[in-house]
Length: 150
Image (cartoon, rainbow, N blue to C red; front, side, top):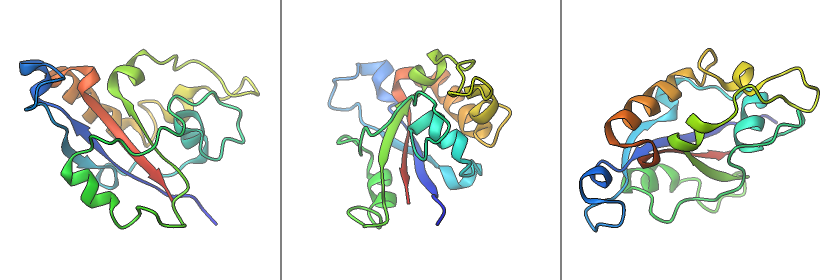
């Protein structure tokens, strides 16, 4: 049985204006991952999220769960999966974390790098492009991708 990834990019546009702790600073749904055709290549899921990590990557964001401060749009998208037996992991990562990651780090074989399996030249490139643009507008720490696996 295959593992699929679903999720959404969110951003907090008010954080730059009012600060991250202001009551007006909330997460907003930006775009569903489905629209960006990111695919479910297992080596990419392994290096990013630790899912099916037969490759021996050090995952960037493994097992963080569903964010408690998620946008209403994200909660709506996730609701059909919430508590389902088919969901085997939910996590998130900010653009700031992704931008500062070592993309040349390799899997345990020393052959496949993070950039090779999930970099700009892969199916994840459109996701990074959207996150990069939103990060430039709203701050890298105010943009995240939330993903769940089923």
